Length: 215
Image 1 (spheres, rainbow, N blue to C red):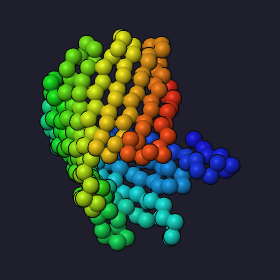
Image 2: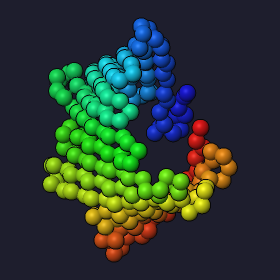
Image 3: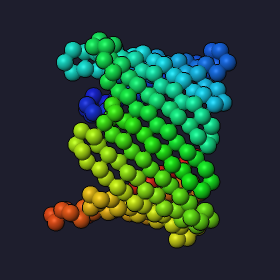
C-alpha cells in the first residue's frame, strides 16, 4: 500500500507473518508509515496465547520513541483471562495497561475489563432471550475513576424479519440510539443508525448510513 501526498492524513500499512517458526510460535512484522513499526513474537496454543513485541512510535517532538508491548490470555471457550501492557523504553514507564475477564455460555455472555491505565472499569452482560429471532438484552456499567463518573447503558435487539435486525440502547447520560440493519444480498448489509441526546435541548439527531460485506 502507498499514501497519496495530497492526502496528508493517509497512512500506509506494510506487514508480513512468518508462521510456525517453532510449534505454536509465529513472528509478525508491521510497519505503519509514518506512524509506527513493530516486530512481534506470538505463541498460540489451545488454552494459552502470548505475544511480546518491540517497536518505534512516532513522536512529534523528537522523532520516534522505542516501545515494548506484552500481552497474554489464558482460558477456554467458556472462561478466559487476559492482560495487555505497554512500556516506554526511553522513560522506563508503563504507559498502557489493561486486563479483562470474560464468561461465555449459552445463556449469558459477561465480561469485566480494566483499561486506560487502570482509570476505567467496565462490566457488561448479554443475555439471549430467543435465539431464532435474535432477541436479546444487554447492559453495561462503566466507571471513570479520574472523573468519578459512572454511565449505565441498557440495550436490546430483535429480528423483525429473517433479514432485518433492530438494535436500540439508552444510557444514563441521556443518549438514545438505534440501528436498523437489512441484509440485501447474501453477506451484504445496509444499516441506518440514529442518535439523540435527550439532555441537550439544542442537540440535532444524528443519522448515518453504512454498508458492509461480511465473509
